[in-house]
Length: 276
Length: 225
Picture 1 (tube, rainbow over the protein chains, first blue to last red):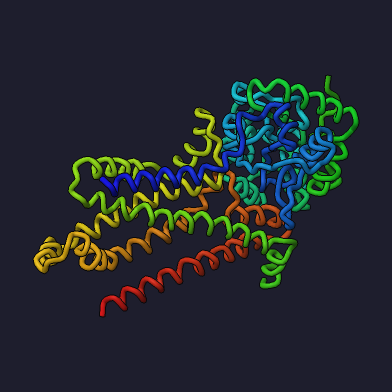
Picture 2: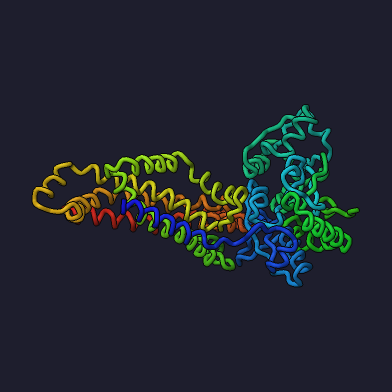
């Protein structure tokens, strides 16, 4: 029996030592964030220009620009943020499991997601667009009738064209990179995707232009907090309204997205001009 | 070609960042391998013993860990513990805990296998020579079991090292994830960035795992003669 007892003792000790950094309690509430002296914001680490880590190991991008501003308004310093890296699929979980107070990760507002988390007012919007060669630009959806259009499987573009434009032949790919390569190879007359992806693609491939830049339903991108975290939610809402009126997001666009999209893009196609 | 390779790695703090990622990878794998050996050996001896209850309980634990994908365990300890029981462990703690749970189970089974594979007459001969039970263990069973154990332990160690990239699913930037961040940022300007960055990571993993294999081969040869 001696050995058994030793084993369980060792296991218990190991678990206790390992679990000592029990960092946070319930957390997430605005008062608790203030008391902790820092806010935990979940961001992407590999999605330029929204959220990425630059060559110096610094967090950068449109989402980070906003996160730093929120920290400035809350604590008087833009550096009181603990950045929590997320993958697209874990954006909801980090809030539910209280690993972050706020998600700023290019999070598109949808009905299903709104059942799990609370979205604040939007700070960006996204439409569908169609990128095509400059030599044969697609300026209207009617030009696509009977032609082949490239999409990535499972995206908004895929479902939008399948549902509303059955006359367009769709060529579907699993990965964005494959889809964009297919466009470069001329395997379709154009490629439909979120307009922001297309702007970045056009910038790197000067032979292409997103001649349709606002198509389909407008989707919005908004900060998200844990469901029921009303104090933090209303504070973030006040901030977003104030910052929108201050033209803060135009400056954020110029600092982060403009270098990635180039001067040809109209900032209005992604920015929200008025909030009530 | 070579120029672009160097420029990706030289840019900013890219190389030091990869090394930090390597630090995370090594911390998780080395700590959990050490803990696995520490916990796995007594576990294996218990499983090999003929006591009625302990082996069946450990058997259950081993089977549970075996059928559970590592990713599920990571999610369970990182998200579910916090969501349902409000136990908020850091990503690093969860990683070491899960890899230790896995490593200890596998290690225990390896030890059990090595001990039970020794022919019965080794014990009997030891006792016939007048050795006590513990002397039989220390002088007869363990030295032979360790030799049989070695290839399995080396295999488990390299497997654990190579499985660490899973930790980026619980938001811990290990070597591979840092590499991915670098590729995503420089990929548009330097098209071959992915080849060079992942190539570098390949070399790093090789440099970690190959010496372990060499060591095991050396020991096996030495003990054979």
